[in-house]
Image 1 (cartoon, one colour):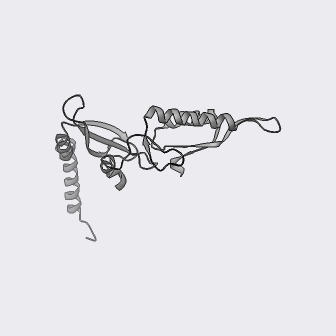
Image 2 (cartoon, helix red, strand yellow; image 1 turned 90 degrees about the horizontal axis):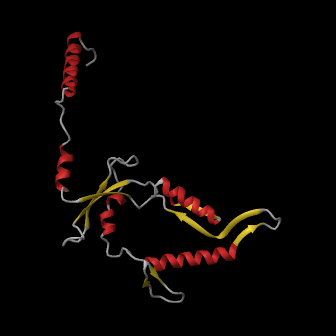
Image 3 (spheres, one colour; image 1 turned 90 degrees about the vertical axis):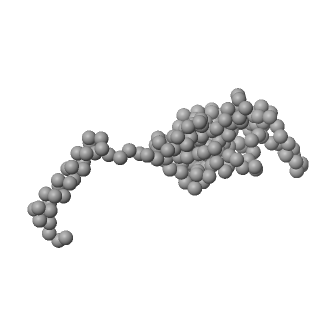
Length: 196
């Protein structure tokens, strides 16, 4: 239509005003899909978390069914994007959408393992043993390789033989504390997964 007549303009304007007025009075359609989803997952426990795959840090909602205190073993049955999260607003990439497969994978490690030097066998150890071993190795290396002063007598307090790679899926607060701990130990080789 090349030219709109006065009568056509008034009809279009009247229809637009009527439609917007009806929507303001509450006659607009509601979101039916949200109600269906809540009913489907009614008996589950919702847990908010962060996707672990990359440095974006998308929010996810995990739904678990069962209770370890009773007869049913707790199990995650559904994962979706968190619509209230400011990063992804409910969307997930293909890897994030497949987190349920990652959780239920038979090859997923759920405990620390140790392989002795020269051995080809991995042995299961407790979390306390793993953390104690890491702390001991770090302390031994720092005691041997910590540089307090340069040859010119300048105070540097640095530890150059060990580095740290932080997880980028952590919150800003966790990143701040991690940075403070790494720098207080004298670590200069400190980076984040987001840059790798």
